[in-house]
Image 1 (cartoon, rainbow, N blue to C red):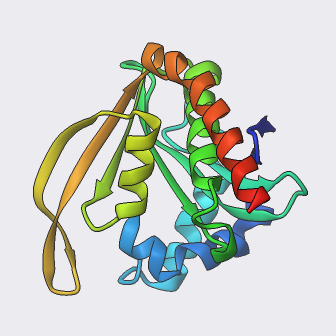
Image 2 (tube, rainbow, N blue to C red):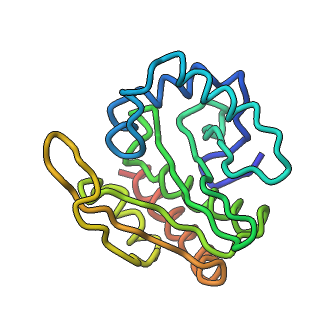
Length: 196
C-alpha cells in the first residue's frame, strides 16, 4: 500500500477486474486514455485478466487501485511502458467515481504514483500523453510544475475532429524538489475548501 494525503494506492489484482472494466468502459476513459470500444468484449476480458495476473519480475505495466482513506475504490493509476533499462515510464490515471473529480484527488494520485515510480521502482523519468481537450489534466500538470516537452500535432481523432497530444515529463530530482511544497499547498487548499 502506498499512502498519499487523501488516497492510497494498492496493486490491482483479479478481484478488482469488474470495477476496472466498469471504469475502462466509461466515455471518460475512452476519450482521455485509450478507446477499447472496437475490441471484442471477450478479447478485452482476456487482455485485462492477463495484465492483472502479471507476475513478471520486471513488468512493463503496473495497475494500482486508488482508494480513499476509508478504503472506497475511486479510480486507477497505471504505470505503463516501464523501461527498466532506461529507467522511464508513463503515468495514466482515471478517477472512475465522478463525485471525486475536481476535488484535488487527481493531484494527490499523481504525486503518490510518481513517488512510487521514483522511490520504489527507481525510475529516473516519468511522462504522460495528454490530449489537448483534457483541460483538467493539463491544468493539473501545470499546477504540479510538470514541464510540457512536446506537442504531437493532430494525434487524436475524437468526434470526427483531430486534436493535438501534449507530452509532459518529470525527472526524479525535479519531482523531489517540488513534492513537499506541492503537498503543503494541496493541504492548505483542501483546508480552505472545507471551510467554505
